Image 1 (cartoon, rainbow, N blue to C red):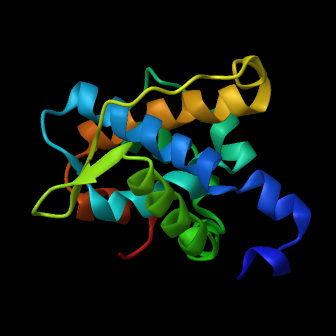
Image 2: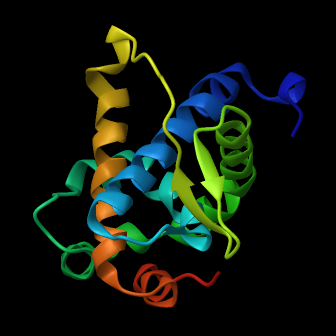
Length: 160
């Protein structure tokens, strides 16, 4: 949907810069654990997990993805629909990150973060925005330890 047709709330909350930063932080955390670049298909799972308040608030970094999902099966309810709805937003965020040179693709379509300078406004160091950023870090670490892309998709009950 074009920007001029989006409700102002959606355009503000799901803007490419914010969503891109959520995705970038997930990739950074993945890279800290795994020596390989971030598998591209996983990028479509990041926003539906992180932006869902109930999911984000129950996540604990000390657990592994499969253990957490076993004790929070209800988090999968509506996940496929959220994922489908956020595909265009995810694509916009990826394009934004590519335009500002914050990420790169390799020849196997895997994502890596690139070094770039970014100032973090004080308003993003607390509250819900910071909660999203922290959750993105948890997801990145969980994805790095959870196994293959197929395994992660199966755990969430969705198909690529």
